[in-house]
Image (cartoon, rainbow, N blue to C red; front, side, top):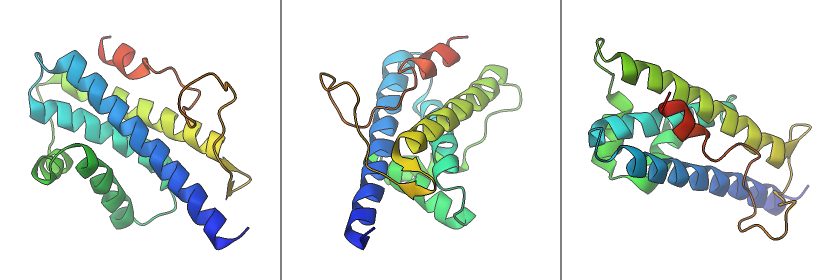
Length: 154
């Protein structure tokens, strides 16, 4: 496989992750803007992104993984908010948030596995394809799009 083709496939995976992060951000904003502080919504987004990228960046150093998370967050929220979200921890008595963070991280991991399954085979990246040619987009993973919302409302 040529370097250009491999770089293009990596970009496709990166774009798919970025799309998933934007969708999660929009869902969190729509569902929780009136109920949770911005800081808590950012924490949920960061945990979802951690789960998603922990699958994709499993072989990276912790520093490189953190840099990837930061990069994706900064595409969605301002740098200062991203930095706070990465350092934030829930209050020990906020049982709902602690539980929600665990669930959203697990959902992120499921999305990461789905993205890899669609974009990688045998350890080598392959282009994303959309089996349904009538559907918009080209890299939507086979994971329920409302999985984040369902988990957070339990």
